[in-house]
Length: 112
Image (cartoon, rainbow, N blue to C red):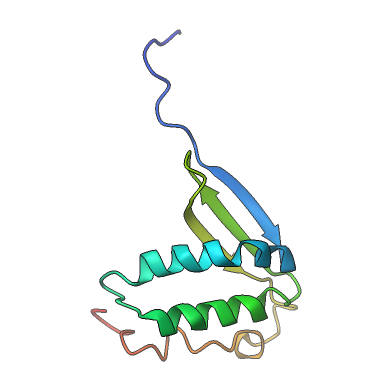
């Protein structure tokens, strides 16, 4: 079956940055973070953006760390995710993840 008409919107480009290579785009990641999390319901200020940058600088050195970004036609970051693989399924999360977010965040909890 053949269809006619426009093909629809272009799909985003997905790029993976393993380990410290993510630091090459740290400024863009921080800009995207600030753009998203400075808005309701989070309303985070520059201090939280600086904390994100510090976590990124630290986490990028963890074994298994990666950042994955999606960019649109304008080449700006439309979305991203960061994380790393725990060394073992038997390693407690607290031993590998020490950021207080989200449990200790003042806006965490029911209805936030």
